[in-house]
Length: 232
Image (cartoon, rainbow, N blue to C red):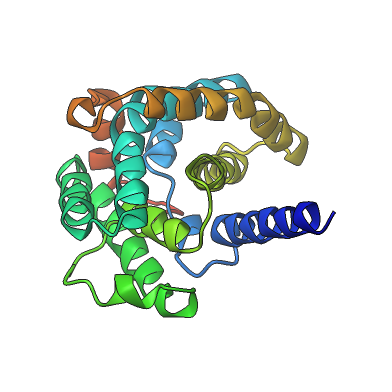
C-alpha cells in the first residue's frame, strides 16, 4: 500500500508540474500572440466557429505536429540524458524553422521569459548554466518539463493544450465568438491534440518539416496590419 501511495504522489507531483507549465499565469506572454490567426480573420478567411476550428486544427496537425513537435521531443529527451549538445542543436533548428520575423520574435521573447524561470525549478540551474544565448520557447518549455520530471507525453499534451487554449481565446476575441463557441472549439480540438502527439512521436527529427505557405503569408502580412490586438 505504501508503494502505491508513493507512486500516486509522484503522479500528482508530475501532474501539478504539467498544469503549472500550461497555466495562463505562467509569465511568458503567450496571450499576446495569435500566430497569424488575427490576419486570417482580417482577411475574412476565418469568420465563424467552424472556420476557426479548421484553421487551428490545420496549423496543429500540418505544421506543429510535423515540424515543431518532433524537435520539442528531441529537446525533452536530450535534457533527460543531459545531452546538452543535442539540446543546443535542436534549439537552433527550431529558431531556423521560424518562417517570419513575427514568429521568430514570438519564439525568442517567450523562450527568454521561460528561461528566466529555470532557477525556480528543481535541477533547473543546469539549464540556466548552459551557454545558450537565445532560447526558443519550444526548447525552453521541453527542457524545463524534463527537469521537472514530467513525462514527455503529459508534458507535450500540456504544451499543446496551452497553445490550443490561446488560439481559441484569440478567436473568441477577434471574430468575435461567444464563450460557448470557445468551449466548443476546445472540445473539438481534444482529439486533434492526441493525433498531433502521435504524429510527432512517429516523425524522426531529421524529417521534421512543413510547407504551411498560407500560415507564413498571414504571419508576414500581420506585421503591417493597420490595427491589431496581438503581436503576431
